[in-house]
Length: 311
Image (cartoon, rainbow, N blue to C red; front, top):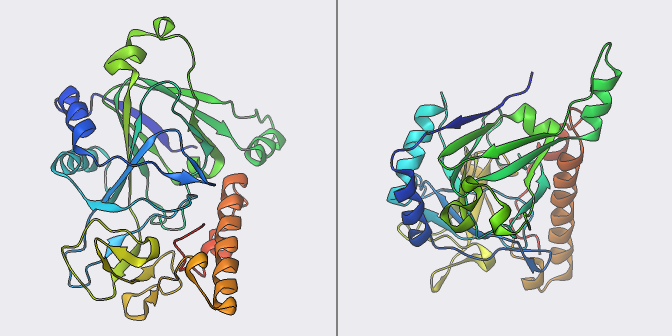
């Protein structure tokens, strides 16, 4: 049994929310393998209310992770509604993406669960123009299902994501399927009314419960946005500690300093060690993207990683 579902008409005043987010969010271009991804990105999260000053960190394939800002008032409102609609969910991180038109897309992938609290769901809110999500069963899952007695191979699912909808992706579905949104190069006039809405622009908010955290080594509070590229926050240099589910240290008391990017390390031995850890993370991401039920979380992620720079 799979664990994904779509809910509609979830938010009050969704048109206003779309317009507000479009102007309120600090959009950025994210690079992957040296090139810009085909959509704009922003990241927001909950700052710890404890004295540690911890921030959630969600690591995924990117040359440099976008800076994390505190939840804006509008995003916090959406977060509250989402948590009411998804029983038992508590989200501390959101990846916000602006699809500026049909040419913007996201390739098929499985979400990387290194830092996502195990057993928690991933929730995507759609505002604006309707786009279609493809859920493609992984080859391993197709083969296993086909080999079962009277088994039928799972089909590719194409799920329309209308304005003011909420898509819940459970861990089982994330393990067995890749999901993505293809580019849509049809002439604008050939698209449906729902696809033409808001000039073809769409905003998605992907809420996650993150169980890995960064802590400013100086415990300096009130310094967001967080930018761990080279350990800088604002105009002052800052180094961060990392701990939690996806880190080597699972508790804050033993948190390690985040390694600098390899290109900022002068010592050959230290640079080599960091490069090897980066390679191990990227390989683990690839295994999770490819495997279905055979993906062993403990084998690939259990020991943890402290690197946050992949380029």
